Image (cartoon, rainbow, N blue to C red):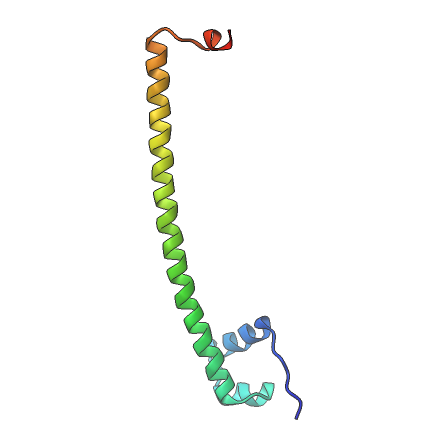
Length: 96
């Protein structure tokens, strides 16, 4: 029997059919794969989902930290501009 290599899209489609209510037995017969393969795909998809969620949480935390740093820097820049303005510096003097 010849083995077929399924693409990620095909695997997602099969897993989506299972999520929509199709039985594992029916999917295995329809696509000519073993039930063990389907369960292995489901397990890998679940693990990948958990890993992806954890990665996204870390990315969100880093984004919040960077936004905070940018906000602080913008406030410092604004304060320095106001100090320069109060000391009589203008943009015209900067060009000379």
